[in-house]
Image 1 (cartoon, rainbow, N blue to C red):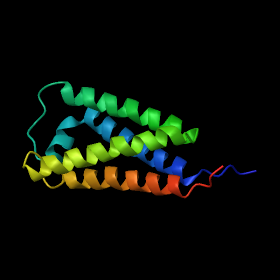
Image 2 (tube, rainbow, N blue to C red):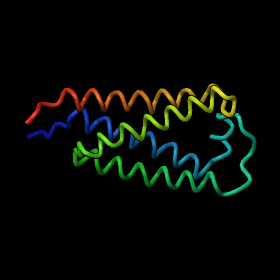
Image 3 (cartoon, rainbow, N blue to C red):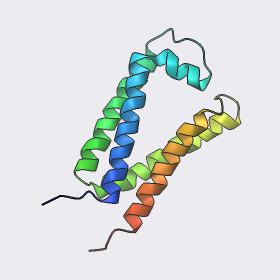
Length: 124
């Protein structure tokens, strides 16, 4: 018997993969990520710390995605929306380049996906 994942679960697993890749890149090659965002070379450890945190967050998303945690999914919508709006604000005030909008679309888009998936779940 095949255990099909709910759309909510899949949305969390996609965010887990995205956060893992970004976190790994920040940890291993932070200068590349900073180049994409339009900043100079990385000279301290803080971006790597942020990368380690992103990897840890990705593990939370993966665990909750595999266990189909609807409560976590609801809470994650708010968190991803805040990140998307923060990045958008930083682009608007000129602290980040327009390329950050790609991350805004990913965070905002997956938040909308999870919201719609939760709304379409059967009640019961």
